[in-house]
Length: 120
Image (cartoon, rainbow, N blue to C red; front, side):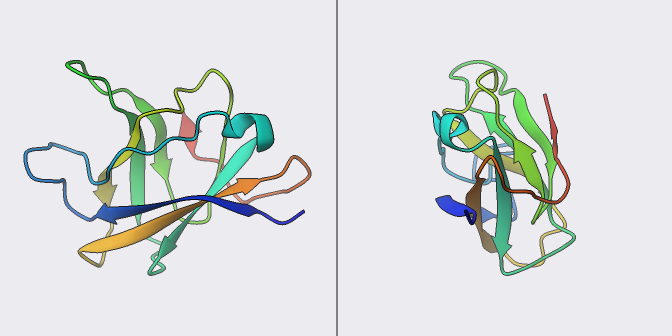
């Protein structure tokens, strides 16, 4: 079974106004770990030097890193222990455009991906 697109996020290369690291709106991967053990992050336009972290949005608290050092084309394993709601992309580095689109693909259990981003 091929990878399945499960989300698309518009991301700015710089933090949003009034934010120190946030570069996207919130999105959710909740319950996706039940269908897909992993996801692959693709970026348009392509940029092999791009890196970003995925944070959990905590109201009136420090936002913890959920996935660190995510790169285009890399695979991240999902578990029920990860916070998979109220996520956002931040700490973008290596961007060559003002904005880009991240498409998240679910990897079926029999699928394989490239590298794994570090998760916390």
